[in-house]
Each structure stands twice: as C-alpha cells, then as structure tokens.
Image 1 (cartoon, one colour):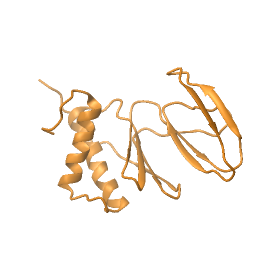
Image 2 (image 1 turned 120 degrees about the vertical axis):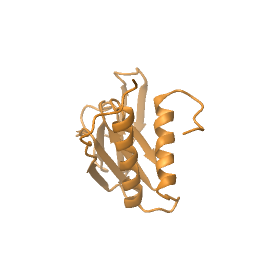
Image 3 (image 1 turned 45 degrees about the horizontal axis):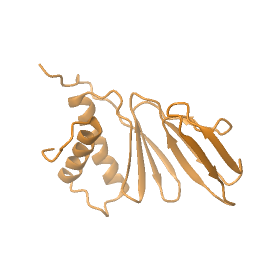
Length: 155
C-alpha cells in the first residue's frame, strides 16, 4: 500500500484490494470464482484490521460487476424490457436530476445507494453481502461472514 498518495479511505481500500489480488496471483483473465475468493479475503482484512463501517463499494473488471454492502444503504434492481418508458426524478440525497428513456428490449441491473425510482421492485442488499453481476445480467449473491476476532485499533 506504499503507492497510496491520498488519505481517503476509498483509496486505501482500493490499494488493499489490489494488493490482495497481487498476492493471490489474480490476472486480467482470472475467473469469477478466483476474483470472489481474493476479494472476500480483502474484505475480511478491511473489516478485521481496519474496521469496517461504511465499506460499500462497486468494482468491475469489465466482465463482472461486484458490489459489496457494509454499513450503509445499497439497493439492487433488475429491470426487464417491460415497464416505465421514461423516467425523470431528483435524488433525495444529492439533488441530482436523474433522467433516462428506455429502449425496446432494454435490460439492466442497477445498484445504487438509494432507490432512484418509486414504482420498481428495488431490493435491499443485505449487510455483508457481495453481489456479482455478469455480462448476461445474471446476479449471484454471496455472504462474506465476519470473523470472530475484534477489529484492530490504534493504541
């Protein structure tokens, strides 16, 4: 983690994940299972050694999107072609205007820190759950159990 230049927790967590990938020999063509195993180890390290409230993140290798929920809200929506043709709303949290028009046959998986539409079946991602979404929009959910040890704290 010596190459971290900033002091944000996001940058440090990302460096820790990359370090874990290097230790585990993860390469660009590594399979999803190897990535999940290595990512799970990094998550456990973050929680156990650094502490872990508010460890939500999204990460992708271009083939699989990973989302992890710990400490803050995170929601999942699998959208099929039927449904609302156009959406326009304002984010409650940021005030940003969200707008899109659906194309015929459009499918999507959305992951967000708030439910951005009111009339769709958003699912709350469970605490300590890792979501894996592949290019075909298949969704896999894995629980990353906490270890029984207490997080490391500075003296």
